[in-house]
Image (cartoon, rainbow, N blue to C red; front, side, top):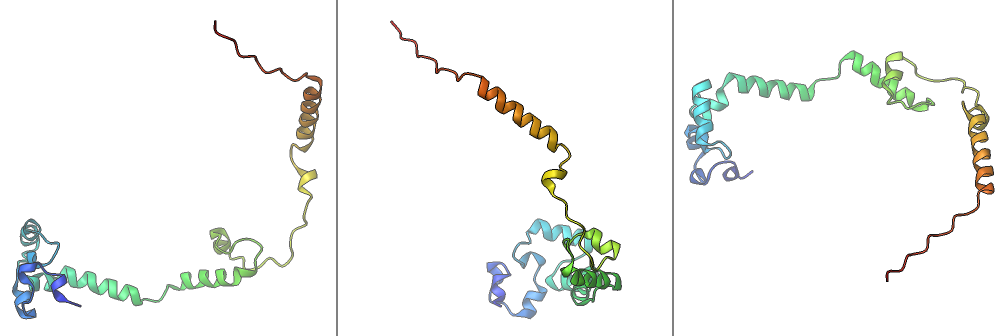
Length: 150
């Protein structure tokens, strides 16, 4: 990494020791106003002060460890259920399937003919039939003739 890409131009080419002693505003993206706020809030004046700030070290340690941490036993069990769920007849990503502990449906449910089992199939059929009869009995409309202007 070229260190000059993360410091302001006036600090380019300095040694690491000099950069560590430089004010935090030497870091690209930190303005003098931001530097004053860090000094007031955390007594941070140099790049070294910022790097040695306990809060920064704690945050960096937490993130490093979080990236290496193994999933909790509950998460592992749920992942295992999802892996086994690939053979299920409903999506394995369904959170209900994970919480219910279902891993497989052994026998598929009886299938019904949706055409005959529709809640309002008879009403829909009657309405369609009535609409077709009305359409057949109604004479087609003649297009309106444009009126001429005189």
